[in-house]
Image (tube, rainbow, N blue to C red; front, side, top):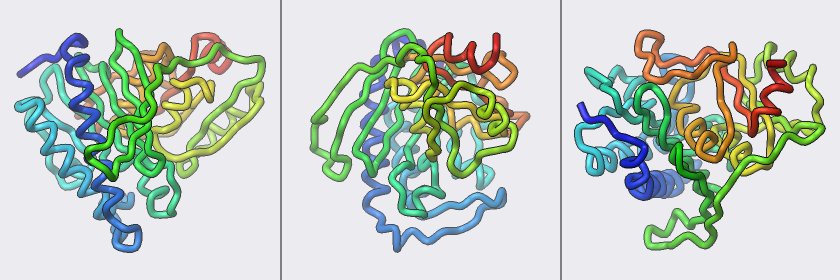
Length: 278
């Protein structure tokens, strides 16, 4: 199977951005009133918008990277997985933050990550309702673009390279809106907090990457496709993401059903040290 290097990923990032933008347009084309909520086997919600976005992404990746396996949330929920992952594969969450989407909030995202050797090396995240796209290639840089996703011909009206900020005396901490567990709450309670806010989806990684937040901890399980694109963008920007025990995050864990037991993401090493004490 094909192995995609960071140098090759750099050449792919524009195509991945276009795929994510088209998936965003597919979501925006479905009125919330028409996005009937259904419940999957794992009791999480799914809508027609999730499925429409995933169809766009799967078609786009098949055209751009034929033969590279794709692990996509809605396909996995229906028992469809690649026979083998190989050294390089994609992790896709077509609509991260479905609960926020259903609630009419603008925090939901589209996530596409390229994994090589168990590590995210490139990622694209869009916030369709906000008209924002973040992307990054590890070893390169990360940037934020402003786009009108509803217009396929529209060009970016803003484009900025992004970097995390140095740890301030009092941290800005982002936590999950819909999945805040007691262990994370206990951890946060011990930290020197200047501001804390709750937000859905992978957009919290983007806030770290662009320097509007400092720490994003989650000590309860989540899925690899929820965080892989964010980890890639944050790492490309100069930030850090580690497992909850301080070890390296590894992706492609089929035996554990692609679950991540927990993680800590930080804008810089000092923020991480304040949080972990290491």
